[in-house]
Amino acid sequence: MIYNKSITSHGVRVVSESLPNFHSASVGVWVDIGSRDESPDENGICHFIEHMTFKGTKTRSAFEIASALESLGGNLNAFTSREQTCYYARVIDEHLPVAVDVLLDILTDSLFEEDHVNKERNVIIEEIKDAFETPSDHIHDLFARAFWDGNSLGNPIMGTRELISEMTREKLLSFKNKNYTAGRIVVAAAGNVDHAQLLDLVEQKLNFEKQDPIPAVSHYGNTASPKKVATHRNSNQMQICIGFPGYSFTHPNKFALLVIHNVLGAGMSSRLFQAVREKLGLAYSVYTYQDFLRDSGTFCVSMSTDNKTAVQSSDVILRELRRICDDGITDRELDLARQQLKGNLLLGLEGTSSRMNRLARHELGYNSYISVEDTVRKIEAVTREDVNKALNEVFDHNRCAAAFLGPVDDGFIDLIDWDIMSK
Image (spheres, rainbow, N blue to C red):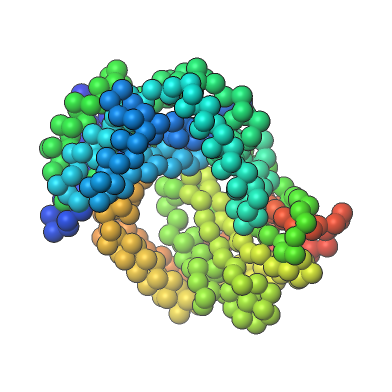
């Protein structure tokens, strides 16, 4: 594997990982702008812009964009997160120039025609409705709002129906032109990639006004004001999400938190799965997850259960969290968690897409590249003392947030024994 990084004459960063034995290549154009960077009346605009880039350019119709790579056996897609917008493609190696050309075409020359804006507005509103009507999805929006109360991080990435209904072509283009700038853009590719060729293609197409790369890590300050909220919905199930402030993407003890995630809720052998499903049969699945952001993060437990057992299930979760804080983890759990983390990392990097994602996230998060070998060493170096430090820092009962979605009655939240975490 050969890693390369270059900066074009306009300030666009180009990073690649050359794997000559692969027959595929993945390439992504990452724009360091996401929903956390939107003002209250702009909420959802990054996601709207992502949709609009596929609706036609000066040289390609929407159908021609869609078929350009599909006809070659490849694929083209995009996503918007709280901190980035990414346009990406995966093709066999010989078609990488076509993939780059299509990606840079939609990024720079999308037309945003009025009738397409109106049509896509309706599409996005239907997407918002779909998420709202899927309880296992909607609970995470409710939790984000409860956890990040008063912060743009708590806003839904897709925005709201009301805001999307009012968004105009002029507003979309103004935001795009202001924020899609050279310093915010990283082009990442992995697979059988010729870095010089990739750099040349980007140099030709992304000829924005020159701008120095914007520093990768921006510190906003952790302004979260966690709350506990319950939202009524007629259903036989209760969706539950309980969480705490986590670590940032660059936090030096991040891998200890990943160990905790593995021990608590990363699989069928995890403590929560065993306690909630295997011993008590309260849920089909229960799991933990983290969100590592530029300056902060979250650590969450999520599950769905019968509404009659929602209080019991919540208490079981809190008791397991209290137990791991009091007793820590065993040497065996630490060893197994490290092995699982290494396995997940190395197996995930069998594909070019995951390698491309890793390249871009490191460039945007660290402004540098961390090799797989160095990452493995960091995982292997995690100690029980590191884990105990993370447990003390993360599971602060005073900053516990929670969201419940289901047939809740008044006073439901007070039925849960929140003092478990402070005992």
